[in-house]
Length: 180
Image (cartoon, rainbow, N blue to C red; front, side):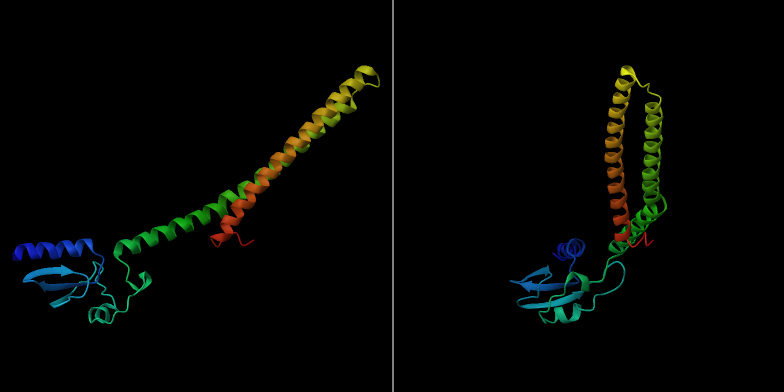
């Protein structure tokens, strides 16, 4: 029975996140649990792998009844590492936004505007070469239609690029970057 009790205690320690394990004697049997013993029993002090014991353990084990919230429990080594990884990933994303993504988004807007201006000037030059006759008027009308379509396409694409850039900048600012 002693080997079974030890195995049960080790299982409870491995599975339960509790900081205090109570060794209780109920109906002549030894039981390990995280709740206080209803009859005869003793409290076993359990420390996490990090070696830091919780500060509220003694008062809870003594039957103080005060339950601590999750933030009062000390972090395990795994939780601390996960928190460091999350902070590192957040910092890397902020740097990526500040250094590459946000500047690239605004550069894409400038390139789009320059390309639209260049295409519009080419169409205007083409339109100015139209002859003052029926064929020239028809050709000028077709070029005007192309110019309208180009202006609409450029406006739509420019709006999309501005929205994307604004979303990237907002994400960057939310992460504490992009101050300028």
